[in-house]
Amino acid sequence: MKISELSRRSGVSIPTIKYYLRDGLLPQGQATAANQAEYGEEHLRRLRLIRTLVGVRRLSVSAVKEILGAITEEGDLHQIFGIVTDARPATKLKKQAKEEETADGDTPGVADARRLITEMGWEVSPGTAAIQTLGDVLDALADVDAGIGWQSLLPYARLTDRMSELDVKQMNGASGLLELAERAVLVSVLLEPALLALRRLAQEDKSARLFSGTPE
Image (cartoon, rainbow, N blue to C red; front, side, top):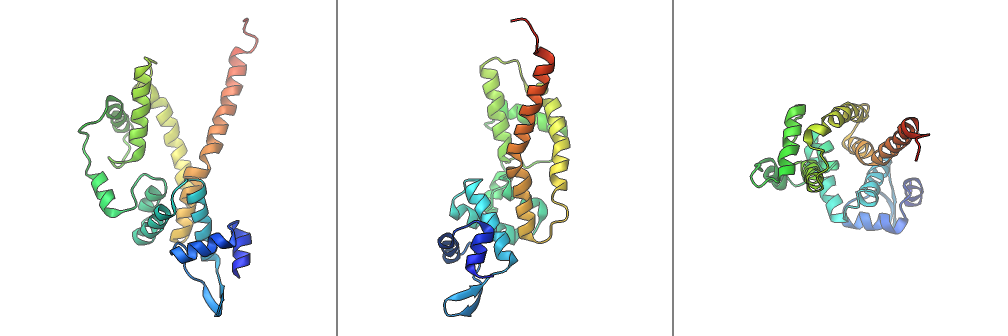
């Protein structure tokens, strides 16, 4: 396909595509004339992935370039999933440093997050960003004396454990590193708003069933 068709099918403007080509994010097409080139499905898939990482994940172009390089270098589905979902840094040296982090200096919330992970029997990297996020939430809950500790989150953890099985199954059938990365973005980033919307709808339903007609 020509660059005009690549732009139409990907939803990315021609000037932006040319920028990605110049910057090395997108490989050059097959030259057909002095100023013309043909592009294939691999270009389209890579461009869609770039668009999602930049537009949805809000990553910088340099960060996307690093991720794409790491995906190509790793060639391992588990590592690709971790890189794309931000569970693992793209740079190997950074990743090794994260893997070697200890629990020294953990806040009470982060320490409790690690207890929850142990209780669930989850195998995760010690430096996974979600541990800090969960710890921050637990610290905030403790600050307002909400009475919600890590044990209170175990039923939610069990539900999300089942959901994660569905997430990972969405990776089945993908072939090629870029398609695997694209599927990882799909299940980890693009589906999250839908899952939150489903939760809100279910909450409204349960509230209506439990509290409608309650005297004010």
